[in-house]
Amino acid sequence: MNWKRSVRILWLCNFMVSAGMTMVIPFLSLLLWEMGVTEHHSLSVWTGLVFSATFLSAAIMAPIWGMFADKYGQRANLIRAGVGMGLITSCMAFAHSPMALLALRFLVGFFSGFITVSFSYLARVVPKDHSGEALGTLQTGSIAGNIIGPLIGGALSDWFGFRPVFLVTGFCILATLLPVVFWLEKDPVALRAKENKASFKEVFEQRTLLVLFAATFLVQIAVLGVNSMMTIFVQSLVGHSSNLAFLSGLASSITGIATIIGAPYLGKLGDRIGQGKMLPILLLLSGLFALPQLWTDHLYELYVWRFLQGLVVGGVWPAIQALINAQCPRRIQGRVFGVTASSRFLGNLAGPTAAGAIAGFASISAIFALSGVLLIATGVLVGYAAHDRAWREDMKEKIAAWAHRLHIRH
Image (cartoon, rainbow, N blue to C red; front, side, top):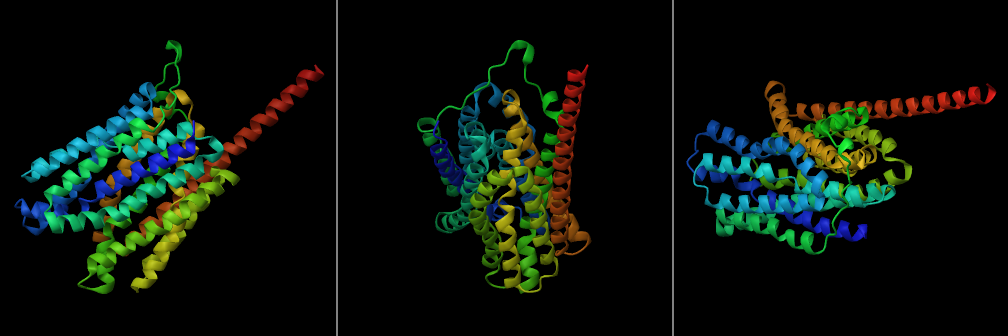
């Protein structure tokens, strides 16, 4: 199987899905206003519910789709996600009440996970000594889509109105089915005997995987929490500027651009020195670059720190995925990546909530303290787990050697 060709195909698909799904972000609150939610507090509540509903249902369904992948393969899982997400997103163009929009956003989460599944597909087909490079390159596709999607969505909504953008989004997602069906090769599915069936019990019995699930959850809280509050923080620096949306968007885009630059190189470096050594370092550096933003008083200073953090944080997710792939047996790989996706969606859900609570009780700049502390703590946790595992394996080897010597003597 030509894994480099698979990377290129999935890069294009991830770009289209990410761009499509983020097209609607700039005007969700405006659409709710158009539907009649005009009171400020109610608008904030409805916007939060509509935005987060997808993550909740996706977190519930991810392990179930993992079981589906173990049986039918991740390529079939990609087709399932593309069809469901594309059709339901298109239906949002015809929602005429906040409740209908909320129900459709919740429903699309049941079929979502295209990007996470694409990582799982590559983890199956890419040689382990190239997994960091492949997953790092793939990540740049979704990040590039996240950068360009809101810009296209904002422009289209200005020209044609809000509702046609949902149709464009649905078309973009459905269009990814063409390269998946006709160009992407089917991934191998492990054959399982009746007495050796896969189960979630086996997934949760592996201590290293549990640590990586926790790392996925905590990293998403740290990253998404800051991103959700970026507009408010930029406003605290520049006041009520006429181009506030552009300035706050630039803060997020700078991080994304830096991630696109850094992720492929960090993935290759991780393949060379070991992802287990690489991940704690990246997490610690990401946290250290987040903390100075707590005391940032100038916008351009914020941009510098966001760019530096983006250079290293881009290597975190590919390293986690590569380590998970290395740790899980083939027969439970779909279930493992299903739990990983669930951890990620739950982090997406908890991040903005935690950041909003921190900003409300303390100050808006305190979100960077939350992000930095979480990233550093996650780095310590992963580093300790890796060191503890290496120590245990070393002790097993020594005990086996001693037992062998005793056997030879007696």
